[in-house]
Amino acid sequence: MALTIAALTSCQKDNLEDAVLTETVHGEQGVAGTAGENGRDGEKGDTGEQGPQGEKGERGPQGEQGPQGEIGAAGANGADGEDGNANVRSFKFSLTSVASSHHTIEMPQLTTEVMENDVILTYLQFSRPLLLTYQLPATINVGLGGGRSLAADISASLWVGEITLSLKKPGELTSLMDSDIRAGDLKTLRVVIIKSTESTTGKTAEQNVRAELKSAGVNISNYDEVARYYGID
Image (cartoon, rainbow, N blue to C red; front, side):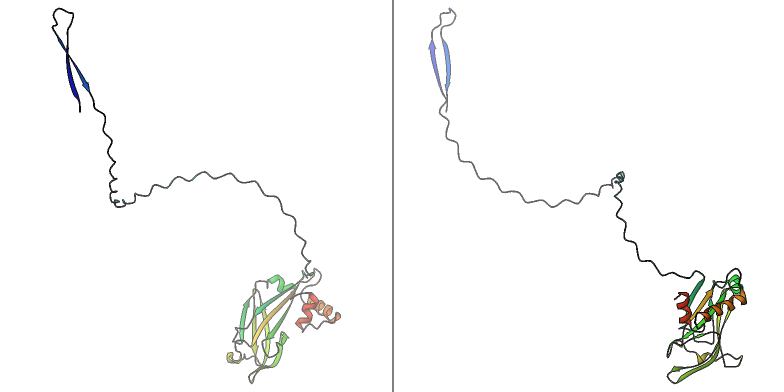
C-alpha cells in the first residue's frame, strides 16, 4: 500500500507563493506464496501415418582391387599312374536291358580306317549264373538259372559307326525268339581295338597279334588274360 505526503515550503522567487512536494512511500513486499502443483500431462496423441519411402540412392563407385595374395607352397607330387598302352583301346557296353535276339550299338570309334587296318576283338559276358565271358563269334549253351538255358550261335557284326549283336539257333540262320532273351540275361559287350603298325594291316595284323599273344602264353579267347597283357580294364 502507498502513502502520499504533501509539504508546503516557501520559495525565494517572487511569483511562487508556495509549492507542493509530493513523495510516494512503498510498504514492505509481502512474502511470496507457495507455488502451485504442476498440471497433468495431456493425453498422448495418435501415431501419425508412415511417410513414403525415399528414393533409392545411387550406387557408389566400385572399390579398388586389393593386392594379390602370396603364392602358396607347391603341393606334393602325386603317385605315378600305371603305364598304359596307347596302341590298344577297350570299350564296354551294358547289355542288361537287352531282351531281343538282335541289338545294335552305336560306336563312332569304328571308322573305315580302323575296320580296314586294325585288329578288333569282341567279348560277350552273361549276367548269370557265373558271369561267363565268350569271345565272339561263339556257340554257347549256358544255364540261366530258374530252369532256363540258352543255346545259340552269337556274333558281333561290325559296321562303320556301329556294332550289331545277333543270337541265332545253333547251326541255323534263324534268329532266336525274342522271348528266349530276357532283360538281365546279358551283362556287357567288350570291344578291344589293337592299332596296327605301318608294316602290318588287316589280316596280317590280326595274324601277328594272335602270334604275339600265343607266344606270351595269353589265351586270346579269355578277356581277362588279354586285358592283363595289354594293361586295359
